Length: 198
Picture 1 (cartoon, rainbow, N blue to C red):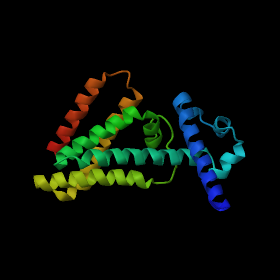
Picture 2: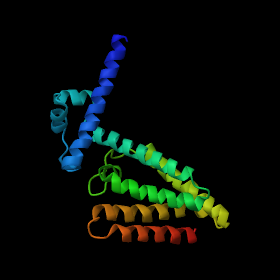
Picture 3: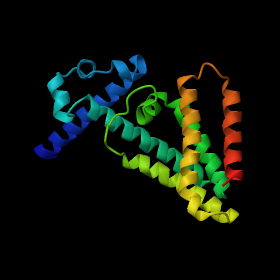
């Protein structure tokens, strides 16, 4: 291995350590308390080493949120690939989205700015657009099957996404108030009602 290759590998290892340490700190203390100093202490490097890899804390958060979207998209692709119809795909997508939010609350809150400022202000994550595209394509297939107005696919995608994401965000922020069985029942009924009205 050449010196250049070794340096690149070391740089990637430090970058990964920074991201891993940031995630661990968040799990222990929450996003609000994350700082460059705490990350540096956790990986036992000086703060300037962090700045060699990331311009600021915002850049670290943006990269972590992209990782969250990639994980969510991977889970959704696996879930919908096993389904035989667009209706089943849509239900699988919602189920996967809900389970992801519950299992990965820290990611979910950062990705969508639930209870905190969104990271990457002014930057549209391509992964976010990819998620919207998946929803749009499934809804479009259902509209074609039902022979309703295909021109409404964009509007109906936005309405669907707003309802599902809004409900999920509320439940993530207030999960202790409502039993999970009720949440799942409400979510399932929302999907049924939306499909009926596509």
